[in-house]
Image (spheres, rainbow, N blue to C red):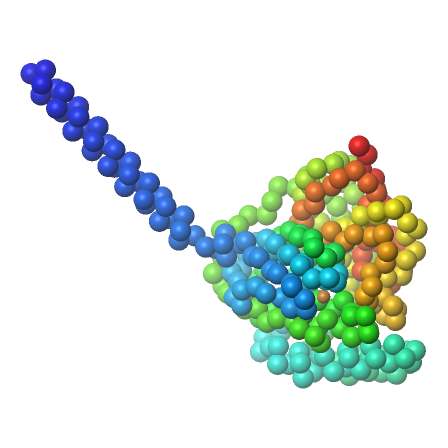
Amino acid sequence: MRLYLVLFTVILMSSCKSKEKQNDSIQKDLEVEISPLEKGEVSVLTQSMEFITADTLMSGWNTLIYENKSTEVHFLLMDLYPAGKTIADTKSDVLPPFDEGMKLIMEGDMDNAVAAFGKLPEWFYQVQFKGGTGLVSPKHTVKSTMYLEPGTYIMECYVKMFNGEWHTSHGMLKEIIVTSDSTMHEPPTPTISLDISSTDGIVLKDSITSGKQIFETHFLDQKVYEHFIGHDINLVRNENNAPLDSLIQWMNWMDPRGLRSPAPEGFTFLGGMNNLSGGEKGYFEANLEPGNYVLISEVPEADKKKLIYSFSISD
Ligand SMILES: [Cu+2]
């Protein structure tokens, strides 16, 4: 009897072990089947003047992890195009007026520049901005989370090169299809909440401390400013307590030197949340070391619009 009991126990143990093994392998299979895109994790890389990333993304919440390995400042903006429009239309209808207009600005001919921008097609004004990162300094990686609805998007960066030509006209323009299948991703839990609006500017609801922070940005409204686009949020570290004038002036692409290489001395761009529509929310992550920082919009005269907020992190 005793022998039977021992045998039975041995058999039971071995069967349990094989079940465990089976469960392990099922678990592994499940892990393999969930792709980063289903998890809403999207890697984007710039080596010089391009976006290296997937051609197709899933709709819903997505975290874009943007690595800037190049030697210039860039950002990433997701433009949702009106139905039927593609990157071919951008190249034929949108880039030429912007190229012509910028060339005229560089020559100091603002009147004709405005006339050139007037050649933008009607459909261009139906493009919706669905977020992206803020400006990112060379050799930095940032994370921004936004909600993407299905459709055809153009991922773009319109920072300017040393000669004043747009990055968009030199490769930083990529068509991305967002499918109706949704990611399994949820927005992150914020540690800092802020509001941005055309009336009150950037308003913080929490004090900011050191370490890893997740900013929730709430776009209370959106409007088209004198530079033809809306407000966004960029986190910038002020390395040497430099006066903010050079930064404020640089954050205006209509200025011949604005948004153009080289970026102003002493400022490091750490991402943020690019343009969203009124009523929408987006998130970005930052690891804050002691120092002086500003949150600033890429708009002309951000200080006069209250679209700048300075803060310090102490030791
Ligand atoms: Cu760029």
